[in-house]
Every structure is written in structure tokens, then in C-alpha cells.
Amino acid sequence: MGASVNSLVDVWGRNHVRITGWVAAWLLPTMVVGAGSVLYCQTKWGI
Image (cartoon, rainbow, N blue to C red; front, side, top):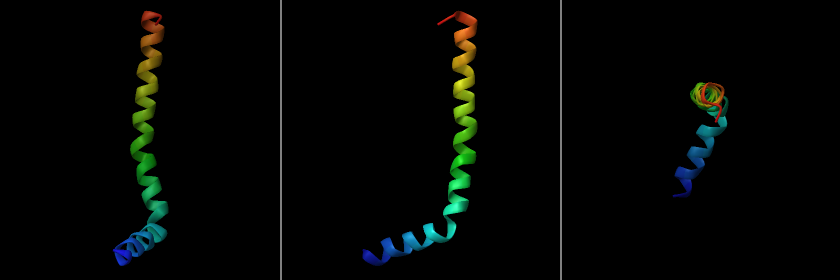
């Protein structure tokens, strides 16, 4: 159990920049689309 946790931490330590970039690249468009659709609805229907 401890070894698998250590290896996970090791993988994270080596690849955290790539993982963070991948998560950001996946989340950013989702948040932009979500915010854009909310703003669109607010301006279109005055909600």
C-alpha cells in the first residue's frame, strides 16, 4: 500500500506540470462555455 502511494507521489512530482496543464486545458473551455451561456441567457432573457 505504502509503495503504491509513494509511486503515485513520484509520478505526480515528475508530471505535475503536464497534469496541471492537461486539467486546465480541459476545464478552461468548459468554464468559458458555461460562463458564456449564462451571460447569453442573462442578456437575451434578462434573467
